Amino acid sequence: MIPVAELSDGVNVSLATVSLLVGAIAIFLAISHARQIGRVQEGLDDAQQHLREAEAQTRSNLEATKELGHETLAALNLHAVLLQDQDLSSAVREMASDFARVAKLGDPLMADRAREGVRLSSNYVNMAAEGQITIGPEALAADEEIPSALLSLAKQDDEFWASSVVSPEFWVRASAYLQQQRECIDAGVRIHRVFIFKDEASLEDDHAQHQLRQQHEAGIKVHYVVGPKHEPLDLVVLERPAEKRVLYAAEFSVSDGRVNRIELWSSMAGHERQVNRLWNALKRSYQDADEYCPREQLKGS
Image 1 (cartoon, helix red, strand yellow):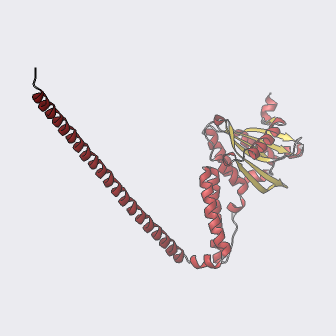
Image 2: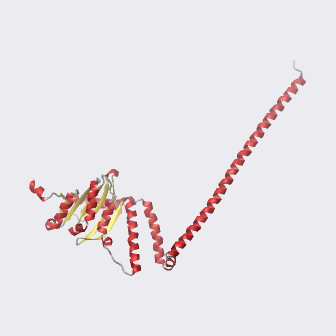
Image 3: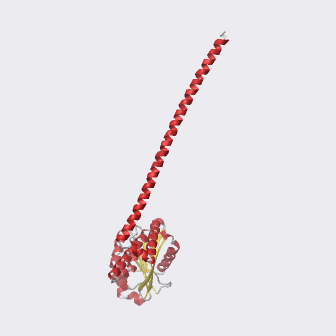
């Protein structure tokens, strides 16, 4: 039997040992915690330093940009002009804003047309500064330029549909456009065109017959209508069957065989209703049409 005094001494030693171990663990945890706090604090300090440096760099960049803008405007003699001409200043701001909107659309045709519009405007201003303005063929040929720009976006297996109400003289000067269509056909684009004639005499016109034959030989699927049941419209549509949608549609208002107004609609920009309206009108023209066949083939059959 162990004496009570020895047992008590043993318990006290054990308790002291446990206390020392607990104390050591507590000290270790405290040191580890302190180190973690120190590392966190160092990270916060670094992050705050980086933030201060970034803010300083941003302020520096903004100041440099403003200064560059002022220097550029001053060098181009625009600063004073913009300050004096509120209409011009407003136009510049609106143009910048509109270009930002065009960029958001992600529409390649609209971006191309916007750039072309700026280029033409710049040419006009340049000519005005010289005191003489000359309006050349490029400014007058939008009736050829718009469908050509639209066709340039066609991919293999796309369908390019068109109706033609214009006079045969249009096709005499549209040789580059016709060549572009040949190249697109070779690249796998299917092109359809329906010619709309008011009467048999217009169909039998030598120039009209030449164009029917020429486009047929170029690989275009040619149709024609004489005395149409529906309103004759000059339309162009770009269809992408792979995506089951029509991308663009354009209407050319024609008077006396000449184009006097053009409207171009993009489904990519949210104008599906207008695009589909023109597409349906074009399909009606094809429903009334006959497929073109060269006369010698008709005689042979």
